[in-house]
Length: 298
Ligand code: ADP
Ligand code: MG
Image (cartoon, rainbow, N blue to C red; front, side):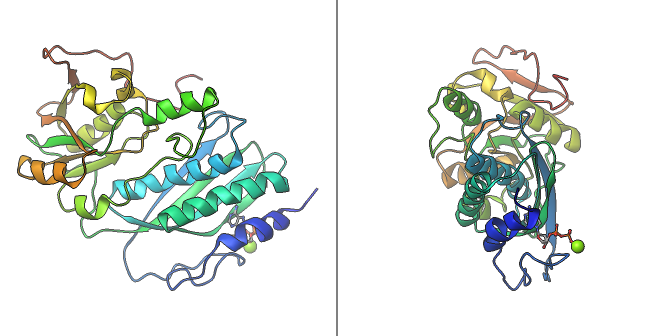
């Protein structure tokens, strides 16, 4: 049985690139962050059998777990730069680490981020990631939505759900959005000047829009149309999409829609506290739940 440091030294250390902001790389008791600017940070835990299938290729476990964590930095308008990686693993081996570290490396290259440290110990397979990013001048919070604002999503809903179905039916491939979520990296610089509030859709549009509404003390109406989802209205509660849901004043509507053809306007902010979904005949559609809840099925 190889020791902890064999895996760290062989597979993780090479991923750590020294830079001005992160001058030390992996190997000492702490990582150094040498940043004169404001940083934002967030943590996400992905548990085997809860957040990804037990038998999933470690390449995708890595890519997906880091993507999910980094998504929160984009949701606040930040630029992700680095992350700390906690791994508990029941029985690590070279083949697992070889594939896992390739997933990390590909993600790091796709999004220009750096692994700066972490921890590895024994336990049920669990990936815990703490991300760091540069804060933008105007942070995109959940509490800035105002009555009359329009509501947008940065891309279609349901890609994550479809990706998981495709994976289960053995159609896994490199463009699978569940396995390799695509994050709105190129959109953010242009978008962040235009919005009043923002969240990433991780647990389902309805549950995440409710989070904006309760933080902003407002309600919302969504006008359901076929061009906002992949399969059907259940995509509004599916989660795993990592698209942005954001609000903006009506004056910026055309400017926002012109940024990217995948952006859709889906409704508006109203008085009240509820999020209502209306069909084409303006009838309310009721959903049994708002989205994914980690403690629901226990
Ligand atoms: P300590 O025991 O002092 O916490 P470790 O021996 O666990 O340190 O780790 C040694 C170095 O390896 C540290 O710089 C740590 O950040 C890094 N490291 C350990 N595990 C990981 C991991 N899963 N991913 C990235 N770096 C790691
Ligand atoms: Mg130490």
